[in-house]
Image (cartoon, rainbow, N blue to C red; front, top):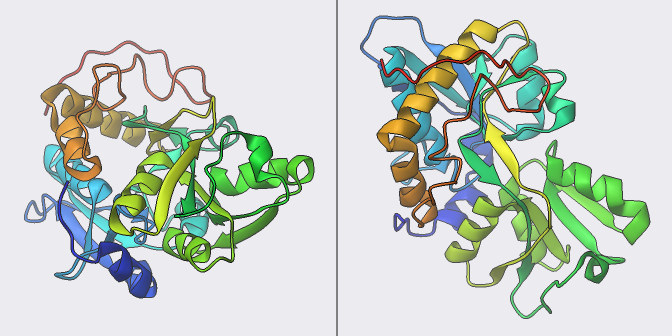
Length: 288
C-alpha cells in the first residue's frame, strides 16, 4: 500500500477543502464532453486529499481508467456523501464515483453497475477498548457514522433494540475523530475504510465485522440512464478482465484480491443480480 505520510491527519484537516474540489481525469485531451461524477473527498483510501493538491485514492484511479477506456474526460467533484444522490438526481452529476453500497432500497430508485468491490459493515474502536465480540456488546453505546450511508441506517434500525445513540457526521474522518476523542464508543463504516484508518492512526483499531453484511459496492446512475450505466459497466468488466481493478485494490487496500472477490468476478447481465434494476441481458466482455 502507498505510504502517505499523515494521510489521516490531512484528511481531517482538509475535509472542507476536499468537499469543494473538482479534478479532471480520464481522456482529458480527447475533445469529448466530460462525464461528471461526485465523490466523498474525505473517504480514505477511496478518495481523499493529496499532499500535492487535488484528490487521490482507489475511486480516482478507477474512474481515471474508465474515462480513458471511454475516451472521455471525467470531472470528479468532492462533496458530502449525504448530498451526492440528491445532487445526481437533480442533474448535477451523470453518476457517482463514490463507492456506493447496493441495497434493495437504493436499487429501487437508482440504477447500479455490478459491484467492483465487496463491502462489509465493520466497527472501529479506540485502542484499549475491549474488543466487540457480538452485537450485544454494543448495548447502550454511542456509534459514530458518516451521514446518508447504510451504516447510519443500521444504527437507526437497531437503536431501539440495542439502546444505541447515533452520532452522524458529514465526513468519515470526523466520525473516526469522535471515537478517538471519546465521544463515541465505536465507528461503523465499510471494512476497507476502517482497516485503512487503522493503518494510519495507532489509536484506532479495526474490530468487529457484522455477520451477513457483505454487499456490492457499485456505481449508481439515475433511472433514465440505462444506456450509460450499461456502457460504464462494460468498461468495468473489461478492467476486471484485464486485471486493472485487482491491481488498484492491491495498491490501495494492501492485499491481493482472491479469485472470487468482486475485483475479479464479471457478473452476468447488467447491474447487481437479484436487485431491482438488474438486466439479465447476456453480453460478452469486450474491451474498447
